[in-house]
Amino acid sequence: MYTSHEDIGYDFEDDPKEKKTLKPHPDIDGGWAWMMVLSSFFVHILIMGSQMALGVLNVEWLEEFHQSRGLTAWVSSLSMGVTLIVGPFIGLFINTCGCRRTAIIGGLLNSLGWVLSAYAANVHYLFITFGLAAGFGSGMAYLPAVVMVGRYFQKRRALAQGLSTTGTGFGTFLMTVLLKYLCAEYGWRNAMFIQGAVSLNLCVCGALMRPLSPGMDGDVPGGKEPHVIPAHSTESIRSSGQPGGTEEKEGGPGTDDSLGDVPVPEKAAHRKDMCAFRVLKMMSQLTVKIRKGFQDWYSGYFGTASLFTNRMFVAFVFWALFAYSSFVIPFIHLPEIVNLYNLSEENDVFPLTSIIAIVHIFGKVILGIVADLPCISVWNVFLMANFTLVLCIFILPSMHTYASLAVICALIGFSSGYFSLMPVVTEDLVGIEHLANAYGIIICANGISALLGPPFAGWIYDITQKYDFSFYVCGLLYMVGILFLLIQPCIHIIEQSRKKYMDGANA
Image (cartoon, rainbow, N blue to C red; front, top):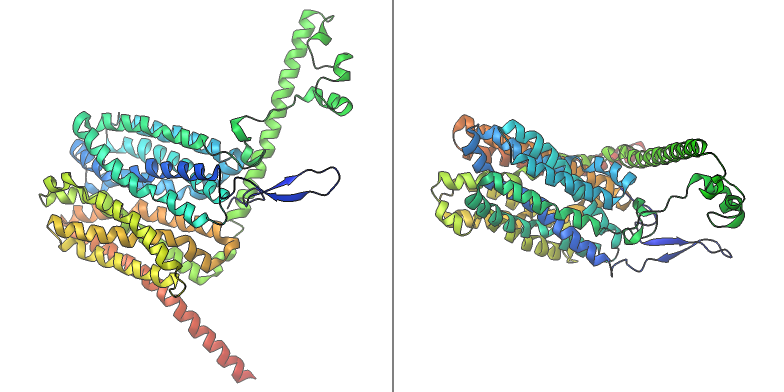
């Protein structure tokens, strides 16, 4: 998706005597790389953790605006879905502006979305301020956090990504408690205003995303902006090797001293011309940079049409369109389900969504360790976790006590740990050379699932006055996606057998 020689941790060094050689970067797998993990960890807390805790605010919005559950659920699903769907398009910003600037701008936009949402007069206002604005800002901050960890690690990339993504579980637990407290003490509007201020820490996380080498991502290490040499000093650099050399001293158009004998009106006109020339040059450089970034982005995604000739990958995308909603729907609707079952007191002591979040952390780690065992297939672990999750989705509506719901939520949290295996499974399907682009497409499909799942569940409730059918339908669609994954290898085996039979018959 965003690969270059810097991405894999090697720099080109200019040597006047020898050809350019490669040397390993000292920060790869160590040093500042662990600051990238810390930065990404907090980004997951502030973005994914906050989104998974939106069920708290969903209850407040239902009471405030008196709209249907299906319509209200669009606010949360828009924020979640847009964050993931815009991932491939955020690559254009990364190629043009770099990860650091993209993350900082995303943090500002996300914070602005939270603050403006505090003044919402209706649900439709929240669609724009929270769903689109805050969601787009989340996507701008989230993707650079994932990309930078990948750039700084080679040997320990899986460990680093695993550690950083545990921020989702910690964030869900912390943000659920924080939002419940803020809503109880200050009301949901002030809670969103405060959360907007907290989200400004995304800018701090973005500032930590130091590029590996000068010129990479349009940044310079240490946070310094690259110095643009004025156009008028180009010739002086050629002659003397330094700006402001011989020609400037001899009356070149570069300094104010050289214009000492020129009348003031002419000097002012000359300065205006030089300023205009500098602006034109900067615009030209920016245009070239944007064009190059767009070409890299376009070739990275739309140049991978061959991925869709892989039927197993197509089946994986189809599965992703239904899978993520089964994980998101409980986070959005469980707080209200608890109220319907009159379990609010028990849930206030320890929220069910927090149980999912905490166990989800252990699920990622344990499933990752099991999948790494030489005697166990990653695909088998992945499929078993999916079957467990879909089974829990079918069982959940029949549970009406806090203890039984807590057990099911724990199983949902553990089995959903298969998310840590998705990059590995994707690599098995398309190969390492197409991994970044393929995974971006999978994440985009997950975003569509997160976008449509919660409103669909709310819409079914509005029709049936029960959440039971919402879980049954979503579980059924999820099961179809899993079966589609299982059927494709069987079809491939049958086709291969048929091909060998036809070849033998022709021979």
